[in-house]
Amino acid sequence: MAKIACQHLIPILGSPLKYSFCKTHFLQLRNSTGNANLIDRPVFRRRFSSSSTISMSLKAGIVGLPNVGKSTLFNAVVENGKAQAANFPFCTIEPNVGIVAVPDPRLQVLSDLSKSQRIVPASIEFVDIAGLVKGASHGEGLGNKFLSHIREVDSILQVVRCFEDNDIVHVNGKVDPKSDIDIINLELIFSDLDQIEKRIEKLKKGKAKDSQSKLKEEAEKSALEQIRQALMDGKPARAVTLTDFEKESIKNLCLLSMKPVIYVANVAESDLAEPNDNPHVKEVTKLASDLQSGLVTISAQVESELTELPIGERVEYLKSLGVNESGLGNLIRATYGLLGLRTYFTSGEKETKAWTILAGMTAPQAAGIIHSDFEKGFIRAETLRSEGKSYVVQEGDVMLFRFNV
Image (cartoon, rainbow, N blue to C red; front, side, top):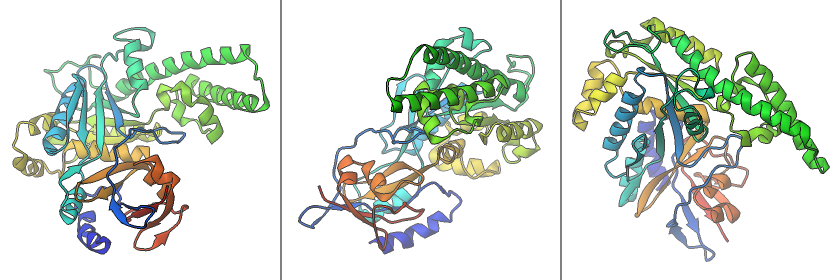
């Protein structure tokens, strides 16, 4: 079965919809008698044990100044995601929160091979975060509510207006991507500065009780001083190079400017095929590189128009514009890449399901995402060959996990 799966999946890996972040696996377990059983266990939400904590259900916050196309993009992406996954239990948690499926054509191939009753794709939660205006860090707009919403997400998608339209007035009177990015970044920096200074003052008043606590306290002080200096220079916290111990010491602060950012250049329909011809996009591209961030070019207008078309006509419409896929795929791929995420699959008669892991996870860690027992009782993983506990799951592996508890 594993060899057959590989033969079917290789053509897909080379297709235009190439999800380089995905892995291909079958997952079975062997019970204590040695008999093989397809996995049929309840799914538990858990968070990866990492200095960069990522939730199993990935959460991305969409931010932007007024009239940049933020809410239009959110509504369109969520609606498109809903339409693309008829079998996925889509839901809108609140008017500004929506969960959509991660599109991946390999799920259907695995499902056909296993004759699965259902397909369960990985999911991503988009949050339309309102209230961002100049002065938000000091209470303007929705102030603290806006900042608290950002603290809860894994990554920030900052929509930047890169289109001209006299009918849509820019909040600052003209289209200026650098100014927009600076305003948002400064609000996050001001918030982090305030939090760091309060924390430093608290550390000065306290005193570590033992040597281990003292080491952690020193690491935290070192990290905070380095980050404070960077923030004072107008740089985000993520631009500071810290040791793993220092990162761990400040993890609980959930600094806003430490979160990974993807700049979403929102262009007009006419610029979608050749975005680099747009001077605003060129400017955002340079800024994204300088700020160690990702970049995706998208047209919220086109995404909105897609929601009004039947599924079968959407691909042809995109091709007529000179592009191969919708913005949803671009956003998800960029988010996975920025966060260093990978996907593997379990497949059986009951269901074929996608699971999200961090790049570099070993086979036992990957198995543990499904259930902690799989990691505790891990024996070996078979990837057309037998591998032990130290094996790091590779791109395209077809996995068979064996464990005993």
